[in-house]
Image (cartoon, rainbow, N blue to C red; front, top):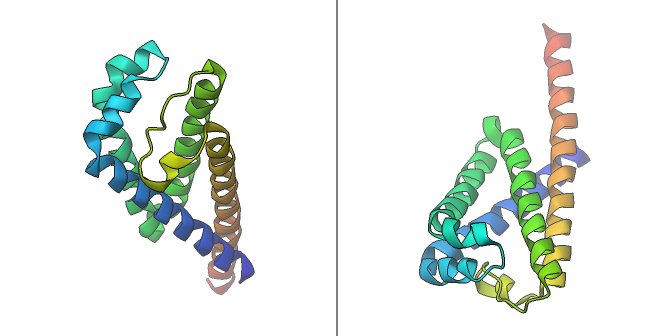
Length: 149
């Protein structure tokens, strides 16, 4: 029972995070793409227009998956993968030594790159915790179904 609650809290937090960031990116699309083009990675400059739509779309699809129980586990894995890819990007920005603005938008964009690294690490942990709890609770459900069959 406790695992179910922890899983639901983790899912809810990830839904809030990805909804907030996707909406921010969609609403301020021009700034999001402009700031991505400033990144010191040559590939980012050319991919920024595509990523400008792809990233918030992926975040939105992840939210949909988190909302639909049958897709929840896959969406949790997608959440962790997205967050890890953002973590790699943030690490690259930190290692560049440049003082560039964050592309996130909203309140999150006011964080330093170091704060961002910690923030994402916390959400990666939340994602793994939710995965673990969901897998354990679904394992219990499978065992109950087998026992009653």
